[in-house]
Image (cartoon, rainbow over all chains, first blue to last red; front, side, top):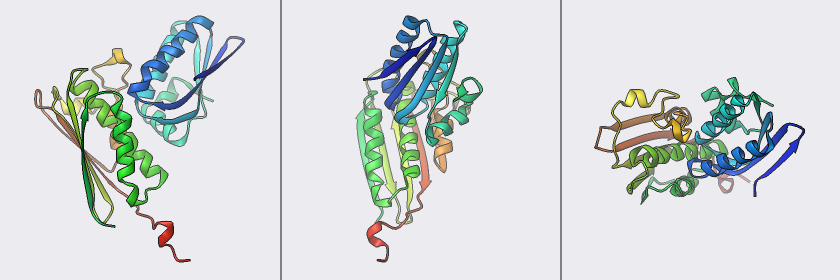
Length: 100
Length: 150
């Protein structure tokens, strides 16, 4: 069960398990539903519970960044492990989303 | 440590991405991999198998073959092969951020990750002829705890 919190206009989602092409659609739809429902201006993606991520995760983060940007909102990513940081650094994700 | 090899053949289904990377992770256990080495290999396998499923077969039925072998000196060789549509321009496909499937939110970073996480990467492909991805990685082969002097 994926968890989220909403404080003010900040929506925080806690990803867990494995984020690959197979699970990306479900995570993407879950986050989009929350973003639309909460009308949040700030999305924080907490990755502390993520055990595995491949480049599918880049698409998920950038897709949410694009969605938030269209609403005038921002995205931050926190608690990425060293491997996930390596993938984000390789792809330039941190040029778009804030590393918290 | 003796040289070893295995061959895995599975349907081109997204649920087999995790299956493939976990099989390779189990296969390399005799090399006593570090956490980093193990995760590097799992990530590279996941990228190659995902490419075969999404780009090679594009949701159609098909089969992916994964060959893995390691030498006595701890060099792991992986070959991931599909009989899908193949790649027209390999150099372009390997460019970071190039993707033919932006609607799936693909980042186009798969080959860049494989290159970065493994020591060597080779892609053999032609339109209509499928794609074969070969990767190599030298493991440090640290001694097992049981092999260390007391």
